Image 1 (spheres, helix red, strand yellow):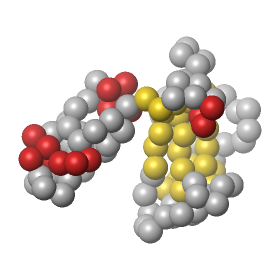
Image 2 (cartoon, one colour; image 1 turned 180 degrees about the vertical axis):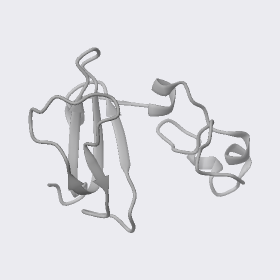
Image 3 (cartoon, helix red, strand yellow; image 1 turned 135 degrees about the vertical axis):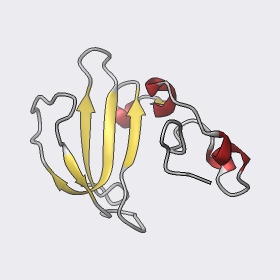
Length: 110
């Protein structure tokens, strides 16, 4: 538990050493040291910590979270900002490393 992140889960990827971090969770579905696989539910979305509404704050790190560098999750997944988001006066500024307005099927639809 963190004052800002609320309830959170860190998942270390064995193949790369990178860490996926899921923050503001409502419930944690795994225990410390538990092995997980793609598709496993590790937590449920919530609004714990410094949060103004239910959402998932996802970060990808090169190593042990705050002791390493952030990685653009869109790049890691091979995704890019969609054109509608890039051209939007409010959301276009979010088309930077780590944003969530991505193709295919990003949440911003225009």
